[in-house]
Image (tube, rainbow, N blue to C red; front, side, top):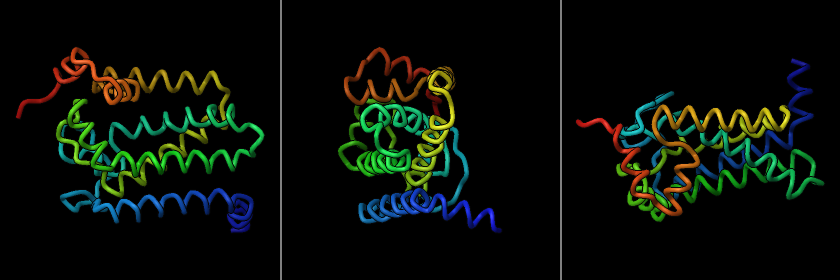
Length: 197
């Protein structure tokens, strides 16, 4: 108990920042009309079907790994940009960036862009649960990058990207490409694994 109190006291700023961003994301998305558990109103830990209507509604899904990459990338980016800031302030900046992305990602503009340009044609946004979980995933990635040597973080990013590409033909890189400048050949290749119901 004493160790827990000591940990909380030492890391109070990080804990409060983390909880504040989670709450802000949740309340903003609630105000945007997002549902907490998704359209079916059911809680779930995992959904691995990127084509199903439960994708981006549960605690975790295939795309949770891309949010770990966010943290792995935010850490060196913020170290370069504001290296004089203590790590806890860089972590707060990463939380704000991720929270802002979650809110933007669930705006009508981005949801429609995903539907038009990517393989996520049935995407209707994240549940609040999933958005908050994505902030947690980014935090995990940031903390991994904080603890590891840079080359190990790079190796983890490459491995996650390759595994996702082989598993579901989609990853953070292809997602960014398709959102910014869609490539028909890439979309056709990705769609080839879509199950036919």
